[in-house]
Image (cartoon, rainbow, N blue to C red; front, side):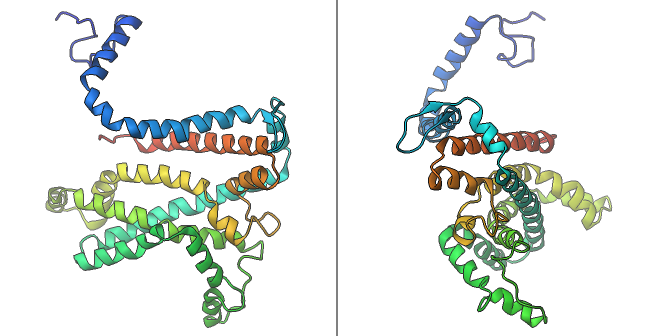
Length: 317
């Protein structure tokens, strides 16, 4: 069979092109052919470029400079990075952020999946109630939630110590004790993170054809076998999306730390996102703040690539 100019027979015409000029002409024709589609998505891409890509590049550029709000920029090379790596608070913040991400993301997804599977085949009224109950924190201001949790964790009148008292346990200074402050914050973020996965898992479970389960039952597969070999594989695209976005969101936790602990006591609840704010807007060290932002961006990007590599196998969209 004769080869075409665009590659082997049966392959996409964009796979093998003769040269750079022909490749550019090919893509120009494709873009022109789909110009109406590109017109509709252009505003979102322009927004993405203006408010995400350009600021990210600027942050990377400014990380090599030392400057404050009232002083000119001075190129310092890698001195900002060296100063940050020598700061013991940075390593505390990195450790706390890692603990928070590892503790919150898997547990919230697991609990969300269990809840979704349990109520999936229940009445529509129950499903609507669960959706609303767990999604409500996402539409409520994080500031309002922080104030509510501040009263819950109040050592004198808070609901948290009241519950401990019911079991005969001593009261705890939740946000003032280095032993409890990080788990207390993790529990807040955990409850805040359940709504979105439950909504998406319920929608995904409803999209799985019942014929798969009927065929499995005919073959003698039990409930656990059906869950492992049908439900989990079919939910893999949703799980991939939730893992990636959940990880990025956990790395960016700021409001709860700012309003409840301000990184204390003794940096025991310090996170990378709060340290960025502290360095840049409290101490005026904008270069150091840009370094933290760059490191945070690279960490999130690296973890997202790894998660996509391991979780996207065998997924067909």
